[in-house]
Image 1 (tube, rainbow, N blue to C red):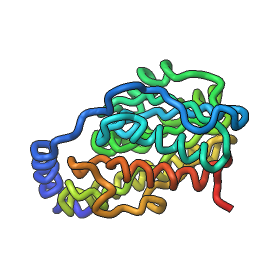
Image 2: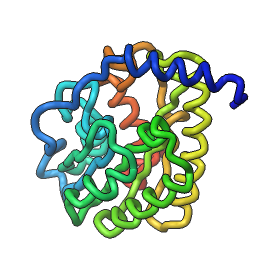
Image 3: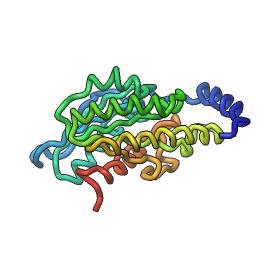
Length: 235
């Protein structure tokens, strides 16, 4: 970005931090199930990451990304799905690596990582992101048959952010996404799925804080991820 625009970015960043009232994480159980238990071998799903894994924007995890993805997998495979969610609002890849990942279960079928927004906001470099992401993906690979790294949501679509700030954050997110693609390409069993291309972002996609997804937004995001999962990929 043009260095002359950086004072505008800084001013808009201060405005955004003061004006955006972020909704709290989802309440209630962080585990659940979907589908008919008589449908065959259960799919064990885990969702790990930042505020979207913590369910900010919805009242319960069942209405957030974990529950939405579990129901989508169950519907497409006719298999029961058990899920767990481990997330923290504000978590960077570094915190996920050292604080959240050790709490994750083992013998998983699918592990999905939702991360990157806070690394962008915290101005962490692609090198720092790559180091932490690689360690997280390596550990997830020991715990799950399939590891999915979801791309960073498109900042350009966030209605809560001013235009210049959105462009700046989008450029930083693109650099981290490029690093994510490399990390996953180097590891068999790891899959990077871009979020910008699969999110049909519209007015009803966001919750009332205009920063996190609504229940509908989480559902559409989960369905887009499921379209690319080895278990449920559309023909």
